[in-house]
Amino acid sequence: MGALPKQRTSHARQGERRAHHHLDLPQLVACPNCKKPRLSHHACPNCGMYRGRQVFLPRAK
Image 1 (cartoon, helix red, strand yellow):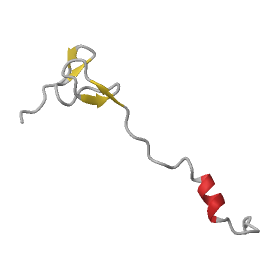
Image 2 (cartoon, helix red, strand yellow):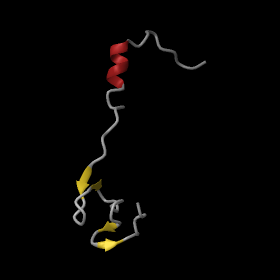
Image 3 (spheres, one colour):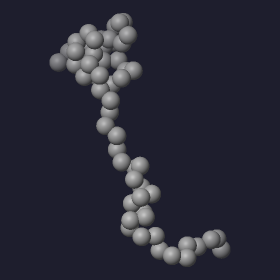
């Protein structure tokens, strides 16, 4: 049999341990081409540009 805890972990201590388990919001930057928000280091889903080049053609709406 393995090691067992001698005391029950309280809700406060359990919350302290899980303090870093929150969700982070995505970091959005303005696209230099169309000025719409996009993820940093990703191609713009609106215009398809990345680092001054056309990476893909966006779908027609």
